[in-house]
Length: 405
Ligand SMILES: [Zn+2]
Image 1 (tube, rainbow, N blue to C red):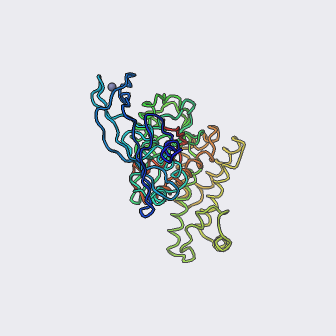
Image 2: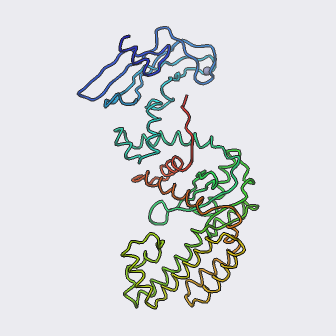
Image 3: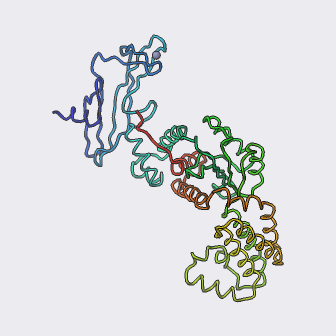
């Protein structure tokens, strides 16, 4: 077997394609393979797939980046035939190693996809010596295609959440299948219209929005208005993270106010906001000392911790009566921000206690959020909305990529 035949086999080429020539340059660190079709070969039309094969009309020279041959960058070159189809006119034929219009082979594209699921796109660009923008285009193509193929027939618990994409209040909204732990749609902004955009996307995929029976989201009126208009039958519930956030905001307001005449509170913000389990020994000691002072912040903190216990109670009736007692305590705290937060919870009471019956767990909500965070890290340095969308679907969309042939 000669080396050209060996490379033809390694590339999986079949008639009429074969490796016709190769050039290896150690100095340039590259291997160039010229692929050609055998003389007199005929090709089917790429548009109408007419079984009648046509003779070659003319050819166009093309180049594709392929997987490295050891440390050597490898390129395929071919003169790609154009045929004259009786129905469609002059058409460039499809080659088996690349998709139409791509400057990469299918195997190279799959490598980029696999790597991007595990590392940042910047790192993949570095590793392959390719410009990141070209890699983003590959990802976008496969992600969009795989997303259309996701099976949403059993989807019925929707999670809606906002996230900031850069400083200055630029937001996106994620829509997730809570049971499958998968992001299914990303919309721009966090207004009512984003809910409509989501439903239009669902319908374009043949999914009936009526199959959604539970929506878990923040106490954010634009979302709630959108749900009220477009998903009237769904039960709306609020998860622990978003309810606790109300108390965390109130606590921070109390602390900031009190800090003005009590220096002991300076730079203590995160001590009060962090989960007590995650504090270092030093931080814990400082917090304990602060708690011994007669501080309004310390009282607000106790009320916050008490609210967290609501989600630890397994019996729903007991949990509801606990929340009522908590509400009484919070509204009698004489801490204005805390009273306001408690009143917000009262206003959305049905959805707060409804969370217990909706069989949505905090784990489901947090699982999706942490996937989005991971995806944002993969896109580090690329803040374009289109890129973020692609990488979040890739990391958090539970997509399946089939071999593209
Ligand atoms: Zn045709």
